[in-house]
Image 1 (cartoon, rainbow, N blue to C red):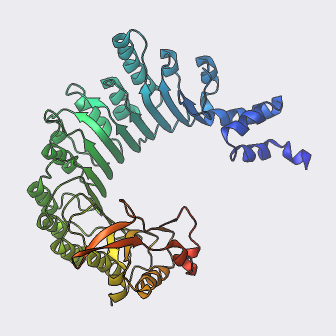
Image 2 (tube, rainbow, N blue to C red):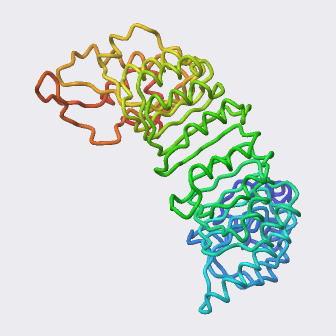
Image 3 (cartoon, one colour):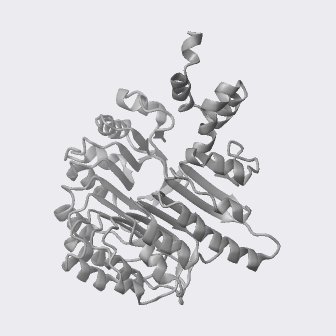
Length: 442
């Protein structure tokens, strides 16, 4: 047995399942252990994190260069000398740049770091996943040019809280055109005509949330950018309070601008239910729909039912004005492919009186608030639990309300207590009892 444990192949298999602290311990055992386990210290390299399990020591650039072959993921944050940006990692797949800090000569340091990052991008064309968060500087054209011209197979781009000026917007957009999945959050991008001259045929998944400031991209500018992505299958659009360019969006759907689109998320937009109806009537049949902070009445539900109920796999209706419990019950009774549903509140008595069966037998995740009045007979609460227990594939159940659990509700001119389903009672049902504490919230 001891001889088997000394085999390098066995040590490598063990190393694949150890955390960083355990790997450090193995490195200290012997020279042979060090030779086998050291590469695992560099496979997922974190420089500059406050995480105690990360690489905290100021590893010399020469040491990093000697072990660069083992690095597959690199997270770089904090303040580092330019030499650290001049290392080539032959197997690098993931690059994360997060809140880089600067020395006393801030302006000069920013300029040198910006161009050093351009060099880092040029030296490492194997990166497939790129994350850039709160850098505090304008990345130069050389950085974006390296991505658009030299990177082999860029796949996912995630950017949060950075600024792109009109001077390097063109280089930035050319780089974006190389990726298939793009997430742009809190981006300050000055309005330019450049998006209209680009066609982003590789982009399939797009999530955007631009800063809502007058001198930056308007909602109409953002839509122009989205329209340049004809191969989109998934769109998440956080308008941050901007007015949705409804007519232009409907025209884009009529023209079949995104024929493969099957996932649509419209967040933080104030549109009326009849306007939403117009969008749902002409949007392609959707598998995923997520709506937050808009009006949702029966007319919108009718469009959803007529065009999308048979295809929906994930439906999230959050903080919608007008969403009733009967609408939520209609979803559960009309979407046979549904696996994930977020709805509003539902009265236990309405579940008890609902005659249609729930057809969502594939449902895995359910987040609704089932409300029980103090005056309700116990049979109604049991009826609600019987419906829930019939969902045999359920893996996550959240019956909590976002606001206070115990509330006074007005009924027949007087206040009555409203409370959630009792957890102890729910545990009497076998299919609900199997859900652990992390998967069952009441």
